[in-house]
Length: 352
Image 1 (tube, one colour):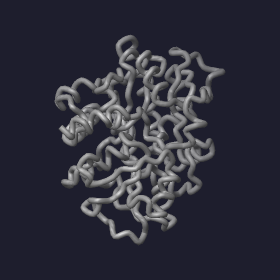
Image 2: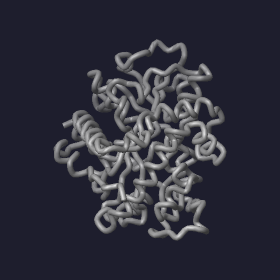
Image 3: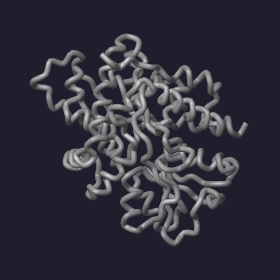
Image 4: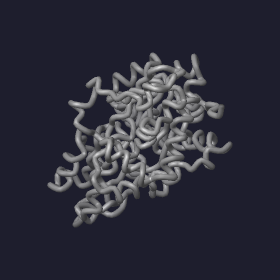
């Protein structure tokens, strides 16, 4: 019963976020701030103007930035407006089709269970979350977390879900009713880091690049890396979600968007340093250390062109099922895992 209650609470507060950092939400969310496609003036846009949430400040949002800046969206017939969008804006846009696609973690799954009308249509990347402790902390493994306070960006957000999976798989309850760990939310990653430094929390679950920046500076030690942990490594942490309305009415539109994303993924794989130059110079993410940023970009597993082969869709579908099973096991999902995983994934024929 406790697990079912826990799942309902988490589903109620889960936000449809991309792999993002909390970056001055008051000024960014719902601000109407947008950018227009670089090739808008000289391109005949088959699909017209669309909005894509792409101003979240996340380093791992690279495929959006590159598809936009390199003109891949334009090549596929889209005049893209990159927007800042909060939960309600994304929810309304996805349900009515005005926002055709978003990127997001398996954090989306409880929201889909609660009625968001989207389907997983592709995988995007691996990794991008780290758990940090103070340099002098005696915490080194998941077994040391019982009785500890863990900072997250939001209750129900991806770092919270990742921590919950990590804990539960080690036999430690993540259910607040059991009192084995305490989660404390911080609306900004810098505030979370300050809470760690002051001793207010024992562990900070942080989005890249903040955790990696402080690790390189010697301010923290990392006890968990999403891209290297045995349970999570080699699995997508971030997927692409398409509006079901658009999928039903114009599947070719979704296929064209996926081609743009895949062009970007492949370019990032071939050009990680140039990717970082674009992201930093255009202020898509706040990181000054380009060498570190390039190392992080390489660690996210963006695929080479050859990897988008006939087995790619099977890989995506298998990872959807993998995380559905994991979230159902710890009470984040109440649906039958087999049926739910089957219903939330849709294969899209991408090639022209």
